[in-house]
Image 1 (cartoon, rainbow over the protein chains, first blue to last red):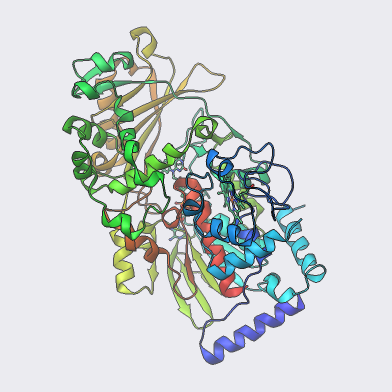
Image 2 (tube, chains in turn brown, cyan; image 1 turned 90 degrees about the vertical axis):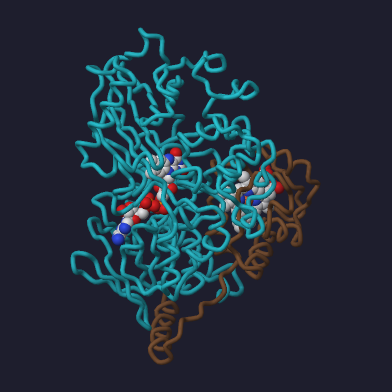
Length: 125
Length: 469
Ligand SMILES: Cc1cc2nc3c(=O)[nH]c(=O)nc-3n(C[C@H](O)[C@H](O)[C@H](O)COP(=O)(O)OP(=O)(O)OC[C@H]3O[C@@H](n4cnc5c(N)ncnc54)[C@H](O)[C@@H]3O)c2cc1C
């Protein structure tokens, strides 16, 4: 909290003096996941009320690998395994990666953000 | 306890403990920044909830005396029909998530009764469509029911393979839908029927063919259980109400924003009441016709652009039917017409013998009605109804006239991109300018409708976080 308040005063000063827009710290993988993915994906092991499969323990998992989740035939037949390059490719353009998938998602993240998010996600148990 | 706040607490705690590099976590920083959200529809409310969760001080101002915007449950009518957004698709991840998190139950809607047809002034029972004299379609098309004609587009739909519906390459091939359908071999009679109740343009000649492919692509991708839809059990407006109730500060109602100025340190908004509000940034989540009414320092080309996007015209007359007058005469209860009345959706009111009947008029047919005052408009619709179904008279009463085009805080039902327009306009119309961020159904990428609003609020929140977190 203290850090935050100081941050704000600092910003105010910079803005007043230099008349420039503030520059924020880059958003963490965790923050990006919370904003852009969490409505559709939990980090748990089991499918829940969300419309996407749970993404806990994703690293090295076969695509469409969560039992009990109703995946698209396309994801099931993809033969993909979730690693850093495949996850980044999937998020960047799901339709190009695995056509006819059921994730209706157009990536609003920058390339750096996508990379940071994928790294963080793949490190989650 | 407020689960959102407790979750934030959790994230904040986790900054202190397990993460080596708290700097890059990007949480905790925004505490103290104030964000003004303009418009308490799903888009504004979703942005507000996300930003509050990240520690921003969020204030939502709303022009109407209620939240929900283009979700409008007619609570004063038996059966509480929806005057705005109706159905929630199975793929509406964010809507479904929020409803679950806020304990807003969803249900399968009671189905509308099947529709018969009135074509060229003649009534046709649904089962007779293919053989009826009044069916104007050529022999090899006659079996296709009017509401199913557009589905033919999925025989070769470029937007089944990609969701990049406004990609410049696709948009370069876009054309007016009537021209496009003709060149695809649709007979004139089919084009006329499609035009009669087209929900994706006010007239087929200014409807984007790619826009039609987009809608059909959405349906084409779904099958089986994925096609099922839901609605909020107690009325769709309960969802935005629950979202608003979750915010720390109550939404300020009856507060249309008149003007927004950017200052070096933030933004200053002036409300119609004369009140001014200062904030570090604003998320503007109002439909484009309403945005056009707000004084805002936008470059002239941007302002011209937002004025150039058309909105779909919808007029609805919501009625209550005391007795199922159609039964004795052997009709199904709903009608699909190529006339003035458009479509009539009749739906049973659960645990009652009464029905909700919604007359739903689309597109340029609304112009004449919108030029009248409310009473004259209602009378005009009713006299057409008595002509179409004289049996309805005496057992049908009016509950609510809904006109989205003349509503100053909506200006229409949803944004319509002209043929080719979305190629450049879609990105341009939502680009942040300084400390102003733009959300709303019309700015979404992946979805349309309610989920589009939610998606756009999420994206705008992300943009604010990038600037201020
Ligand atoms: C008749 C109809 C049927 C529909 N059917 C469906 C459906 O079946 N399924 C589906 O998914 N979607 C449907 N939709 C679309 C869906 O309702 C909308 O896409 C969604 O509700 C839009 O949300 P929004 O937050 O973008 O905009 P809105 O809900 O319009 O919210 C914008 C808010 O901004 C406020 N505002 C405007 N100007 C100002 C100002 N100057 N100052 C302050 N506040 C202001 C408005 O009052 C409003 O509350 C339908 C819409 C209509 C009209």
